Image (cartoon, rainbow, N blue to C red; front, side, top):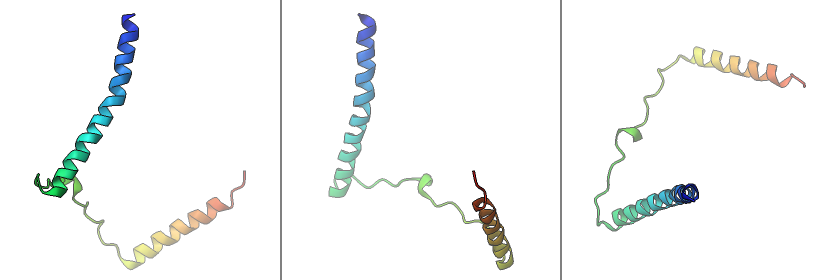
Length: 79
């Protein structure tokens, strides 16, 4: 009997915890939109990653040609 109780308790927690989190996020967002709570920035995680170093046009064309040749090689394969 206690095993069944613990199983039901775990299943209920698995269902209720995400729902409670969703409701709290929704409430927080609505309060931010109404101006009752200051907007919180996303932090460093939202900053865009730096671009790749600039490649010369010749290098870009060579890479593009290599990718296209690989695509052509794979399209000719038959199973």
